[in-house]
Amino acid sequence: MGLVLVGLSLSHLAEGVQLVTGSGTTGAWLMAVGIDLGFVALEVALLVAPIDIRPAVSQYASPAIVGTLATSAEMNAFAFASHAQGLMIYPAIALGCAVPALIFALTKTGAALAFQKH
Image (cartoon, rainbow, N blue to C red; front, side, top):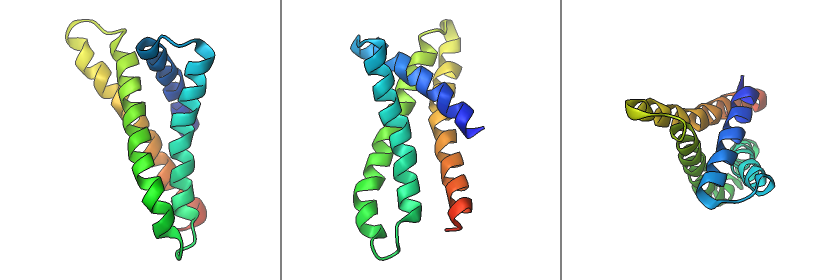
C-alpha cells in the first residue's frame, strides 16, 4: 500500500512542480523523486542510526523531513486542487495533504517494525 501511495504522490508532486515552476516533465519528476524518496530515506536513516550518533543524525534529518513533507503536501494539494471546481477544492486540498502524511506514517511504522526500533 505504501508503494502505491508513493507512486500517487510522485505523480501529483511532479504535476505540482510543473504547474508552479513551469519546468519540464523530466525535471519535475526528478524533483518529485528527490523530495518524496528523500524523506523516506531520512526517516529510515533516523530509525537505523546507532543510538550514539542518532542525535547528530536527527539534527539534520528531522528539519529536512519536516521540510520535504511540507513541500510534498503543498505540491500534492496544489495538483489535486488544480482539477477541482467550486467547494470541491477543499476536500481536494485535504486529500493532497493526506497522501504524504500517510506515506510518512507507513514508512515510520514499517521501518520501525522491520528494524524493531521504538
